[in-house]
Length: 232
Ligand code: G3P
Image 1 (cartoon, rainbow, N blue to C red):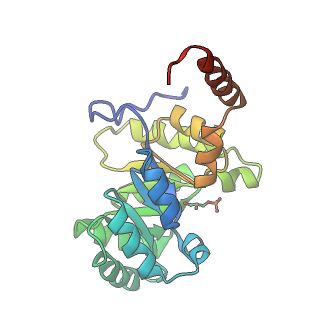
Image 2 (cartoon, protein in one colour; image 1 turned 30 degrees about the horizontal axis):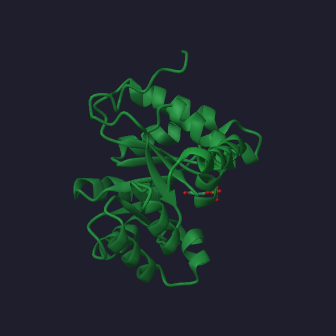
């Protein structure tokens, strides 16, 4: 089947993809929030470690800054431990989404938490079968990693099209596809073309998306010409 347009978000009033920032850096979140680019946040242990600060301190600060979903990843490896950790983390902010790796114990925890109304993101998804199981277990967000598939010479963005095509067959299935492991602007373009609901973008990729040499050249020329005719 060809790449089917994602009909799932049509009618929800969301006609442009949502952007989450893939960072735990407070100042960056604050600045990009001033451009209206922060619909939510994704973190993981690697991004938290980069801050050099404690997990709970960082998540609480982000929750004070951001209105949208804030993804905080658990580290327990058994379902009971994941659920216990999830309940503790959820006390730090009502917008927190619990990020859980794609495995057997993770899906048991997702299923249990979904029945309690606690939103979860299933992360480290690398195949359509994994996405189907995660959605079936009640995940609120499915998080396929694009860049890491590219890293092993597999086409990461094809996975996005395949997942949105499958989920597009079941428009009422209440979960969203969040493209992650985004390494450059063309990943963002392809993810949007694939019709994902959310793209979680590292700040450095946002910077790359903003810049174009012809824009800079045009601004310079306009400002130069304005000197001739715009009254101060
Ligand atoms: O949200 C997941 C993302 O942070 C992973 O990115 O570049 O380490 O694959 P990367």
